[in-house]
Image 1 (spheres, rainbow, N blue to C red):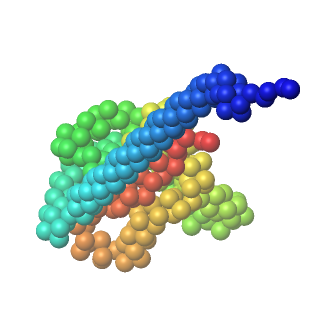
Image 2: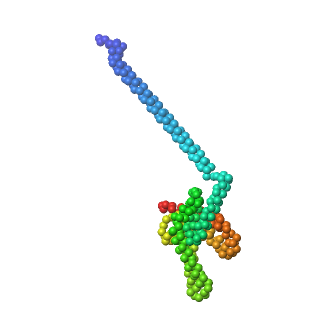
Image 3: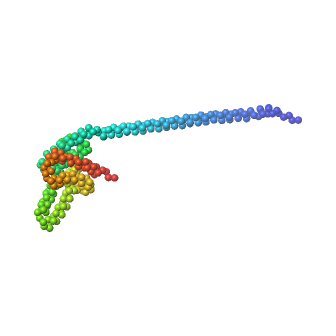
Length: 290
């Protein structure tokens, strides 16, 4: 008769190695889980630190941008305060400009007395008024006579050419008025063409001499070309100078009563008014071509 082993004895005897292995595997798994938890905590802490650093960097960037914007606003406000003078400053600026124009007109009148030097005087006048429009004038007297000396030869040459041209036109006009032949009629048409040519060529000659260095013939040619290309600038200058001349021709008494104003102030004032348009004209000529 077979005797069976007790169940407890068999269980204990067969389960020890199995239980030990099971315990080891559970312990290993527990350590692995703990390690994974620690790794996840570290990763979570790192992501939090990265997000915090990113938030801090964003905040600092926003603060820097805000600081730059406030600084820009302050500089713009200060520039506006500088650019916008008070009424008293405007009054004194106008008086200062008026005084400079008065002395400039005196220098111009004195240098025009020899008549031959009128061309150099006009060039020097435009040189100073161009600087006055840009607020770059320093000593009006020094700048005027420096420009008068440096441009004397070329300006005088152009002025003499203009005088010869105008003298020929005057002689033709006298012939047309005193004669009624067919030749006089044809000459009248030719005289009209000559007048149009002079009207377009002369106004910009001396402003170009005041601004650019070139040969005499190129300056005369460029004055004609630019007058046709920039009709607005030419028309303003032509109207400013020709309108008083036509007015005096229609009523010479006006000139008798106002000639001293031209000698003291009005010539420089008209040149300054022309320089307001000439400065923009120079900018268009000197703008880089795309």
